[in-house]
Image (cartoon, rainbow over all chains, first blue to last red; front, side):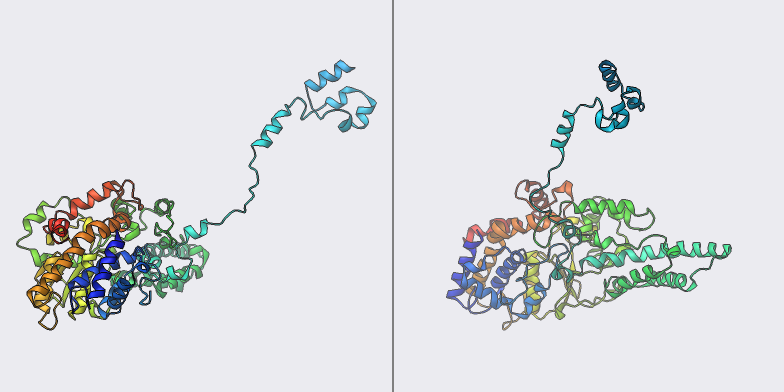
Length: 87
Length: 445
């Protein structure tokens, strides 16, 4: 199921600068928020869609995203690539 | 002679070989006659016993127990402040009790003329008093101080060691190992340790037990110092709702964890202590770390360059002060510095855009078509994606770990997750925006 959504994100990211248009918008933030929560569990197959991965890399490198990469839930350490900008 | 031999063998006594009377048997009784001690024993049972013994395995035993019992053998796990956080909590109360015990012991020793370690005892008492008076956050550094406490205990004379220092931190272990394997026995370790500890040693032991041992994993949030904040925001409107909240939860102040403890990064959202009754220093955001909606607000705060104190909240714990503020029990809750509370993802995101945004710095857009497309995709991810992917996965893998067992909590499994899902749904789907979350995607799909 998540692959279909990744395909849609990749399709949007290939045709536009950001998901909703030329500017970064709440749509990018919403998609990144959901995917990063899954990414904390290591459940996102980034290798399946290069365009979606490139889009997520761009938004992951933003300074506003940095606090999320420092998250740590007790007893559930994030995977190694969670905070890696070159995942 | 032969008959007497048989008779003697059948009735073995200690004197049996001497009574046989044969020269050969007296010369060498051990070889010429059966040993009386084993005479008459059924030999076939020896074979049966031999076949029942444990046969050596072809494979060498795999040492898995140390890795399961000591969380964080690998370096990556020790980087987390998990293990030591609980240690300092326990060491203060224990140290106070130990100081009392040592002090009384020392007094008795002086009366009896036994030389005592004056310096060590005084240090222990002073240290305990200092820890009692210290602010919570300083005691919870989980760093060198805790190690020094332990070392000080080790260096004391054996006569003054009333009981070993608390090492509960090693038992407050995650149920899920770093390799993803489940630590099925860890919960029992916590229970056993709790039983071993003296009843009066830890003042909050009863509180822990009352809240269930699962809370040991995550240390339920005690934001007593923020209750005043909540009351200020909803004193008049929510009085009736507060009365309607079932049960009253006592939150031990001594256990109060610093709010936003899990939040360790980002200078933009650094905390400054909120003094009860004082002026609000900055905006606040109640969130849960892996909740996608809270994550979006946190990213938005960074994009808007908005400083806010982030406070972790767990809506399923139904804290009275939180329910009074957010009756639907939903996150995120953004509380502006003037006291305005924007509750829920829609309210918070729109509020941020309207108060922090501008035409050049907006996340929703300026033109109607742009805003419509943005909102369509936001609804896609908050509704469709959350309903199909992130909601079930996070509920199953994260939320259930924090739920009590009677509410469907436990290790992640796709079977039998219905209870947890229904329980969460009863809390979260009562939100006003849930119908839009759940069905909004159909309009845009």
